[in-house]
Length: 338
Ligand code: SF4
Image (cartoon, rainbow, N blue to C red):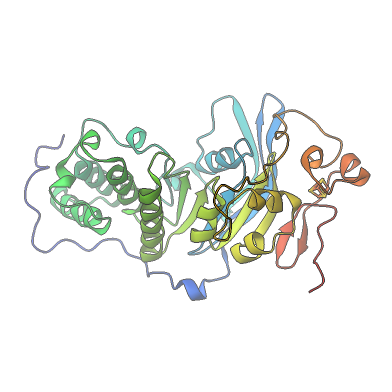
């Protein structure tokens, strides 16, 4: 623990590294992160199979789908955090240039699922943030401590709580501390992998709202990995729905989640209750299971579960194609006459 961690903060805290807040109504159109043909392979088996998407400057992109769809592996590949036995290829550009190891942790930061594993158990949270500031921005000990306290105040953690160790904080407070840690050095991109799974539903939404607000305030983009479509609907500008290591549908949230074109997106949405669903209604569930990694199919991987599957689906892989401002990977996706 740094010796001076409990000294009072100066009355005039140093200025944080700042970037202009994002006006969400007028997001710039250029891609901050551009992912093209990303594959992740375990022992010759492709688990992520040619995924492509962009994250624009200042936007929230949700990567969603069932468990095992390849969402977290995609995120881990971007962070350079794949298991040792995995290999990845494809193109990942940040501001138009390939991502380097030095970008990870500085220009790309992570908000993990488990805050306890991200924080040191032996140091107060304020000290951990001060240390991150000193190592990235080279602040003095005094300035780093002051800025850390400011960063924690921005996520609703008091000066007293900043002196607590992680195990002394509630789950929601810990996740707030991790958000402060991830954003304090103003990265260009945050990758949050199921960041609220371990929290109760009321805290989940508050933490996600805070995460999005901190991104807006610092000008960072957010790649939000979530299995929950309602989370994507509430917090994302764009959504990419993954199935069996590929992207089934990708586009603006309103288009994808209110007017889905992929039968897979439609089936996922049908299994969610809406405000009009009467109590005790039995919701439809997706029949069958996603294919296991390495299980090969001649055609569309969703065909065994898809109510619209035809012989074409069972014999030919569909290619991603542009339709109604989105990308859809389906032979039979088409706009309904309005
Ligand atoms: S390609 Fe065929 S099986 Fe696959 S999602 Fe489209 S309709 Fe269903």
